[in-house]
Image 1 (spheres, helix red, strand yellow):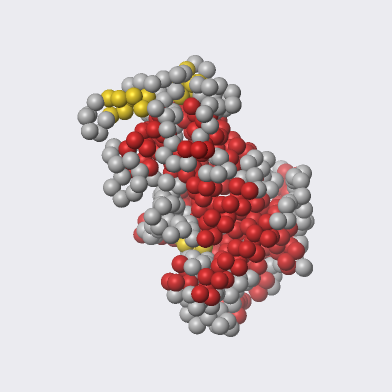
Image 2 (cartoon, helix red, strand yellow):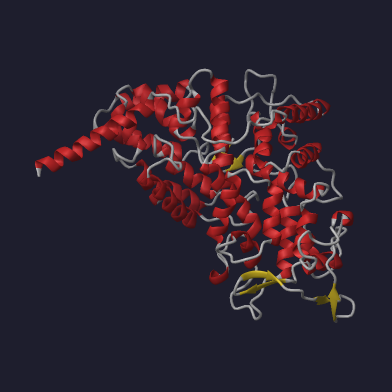
Length: 547
């Protein structure tokens, strides 16, 4: 018996010694990007300069002094939440604090772009636009398989236009050819014909890929825009041939019929596009009867600026919390468009529809690096709504449910919970996130709408299972206990707690206050006070907002 106890405590001691290094060491896992991609085209920096010059001119014309630039840790928190849906780990922060700071941030940022956490997170965000959040008909739709496939496409850097063509035109089984889930998600359980819905597919293409709401004209001409019912029906007709069979989705020549609004009779509708008709190929490269391939070629044509605008606006929204144009899927012709939208859209099309390049440009732009508040030492006297509207200050946005859950889970670990983490930590994150979101409330497809926090959500943060478990004393899987046991210096413990939860060091008054409280206690009481501090930081307003 005593031998087993000795082995157990030896394992525990070894684990604690390894974790202690996280408080002071500068890990090398972020020093090099684990990727064999070709060198990055440096022209993205020229685009950043053009973009910044454009915004600077707008701020100057509006007589606005932009907010100051944020420090490295604030920028890293911002980027981590935007690209991975979580705050950075203490392990990552220790790396960023090393010298030279600028080089280390760039190394870490490139690591993030190659990180599976980024691919999985962006795949989930885009999946919500492409196939929604519901599971659909189980036998013919696999949402998780679809999101996993999309993550794999992002991981290898596949061009966005190629991904989009697969979504519209892919054939096969939804398990072997996951892109076909874009089509099969429109098959409703108990539906009479059991076939994909051309109308819903047309609506999905319009909103997610073109950033327009032509689906408002499904039943009648749009009352406030140029779109006619015939425009929507012409797009839907491209999907009439998509049929489900024993071999999965296959195209069979089919006549598409729709109601004539004037006569009330059914009439045949020929596939047609509502604009830029010159970009529509007369037939596909492979099969003259495959209208979906024609539509895919038209949607992704380099000259179809709506396609590039739509994804640029969506990625901008994912990184800032709101798009250059809102709603994000309704970029209308009758409204003035921000010049930055077309600058980025043109760059995106000219450089092979490269999502990594787009993300890199946005993350290095002046708006993304502006503070969300006034710096007393700067020339800005106060931030106005005009500052936020013109991106002269970073917009404050609430964290989405999955960002809250992932950040709580990551804050409870000193090491990074990524694909290299132990399986136990990864499984804990998966189940913890799902359970929390179920209770917290998923915002669904309309995740970019400004929805306020609810009382049940605040109660869940204060008294819920996830926060309680992550702040409870546990020397093996809980960072608050590890910090308390491994940091004899109270100042080091307070600093580590702030860095782990809020990704910043405490201010001088904060440090002085909490160090004084901590120094009054020792042993288990000291750990209990650190638990209280962790709980307080996790329930602070600052933790729940991106800023």
